[in-house]
Length: 226
Image (cartoon, rainbow, N blue to C red; front, side):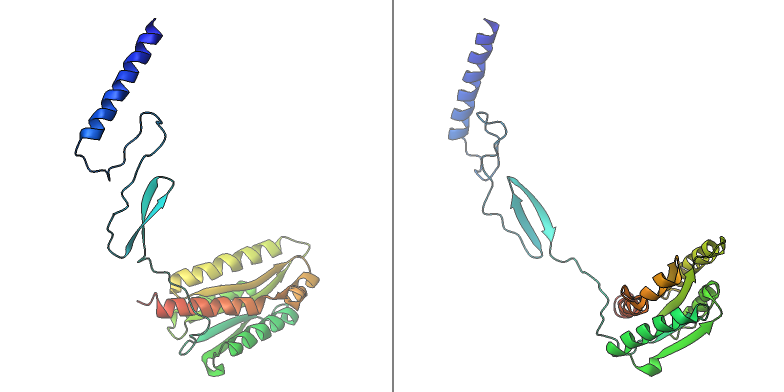
């Protein structure tokens, strides 16, 4: 009995609502929820006027604004005019670091960086790279500093100390100088791994680091200056 009365009342309410809506003068552009189908969005205005750069995107009964004015700042690998680079290279494991340096210099050349715009600074080992990188960054002469080294695991924990210090030190050098300092130090388990990454089957990480240096130098010079 109670269920029947509730159903009758609900039906009467729906009928009254429909008659009211049909006779009302409210704009038809206003979306409303059908009582017959509570989850169905009946209509949206198709006459929305939007001034650039805002774009209205409709998706399954909903809309959200997406701005077209967002700028994307990306460093260029082709705008290298006026960019100067310093390369800090560790002499330790020189058989590897020389190959990494060759890859880096070849990459600079291929991307039209002039030889006179590149300075190579040699240091005893990877542990000494960060302090020199920071000094070069603070000199104001370079748009990026590329750090090249090779740390190979031995029988003691010396490897961990040098590898961790080199990585954190290069990061600090960039943060403290405000100039991108690129980490191109190999940390390998053995000599074969290192050689494979210095021109072997795994490519040349020195060349890859040089690309990073060019892109970051361009980003800072052309988009993030001052």
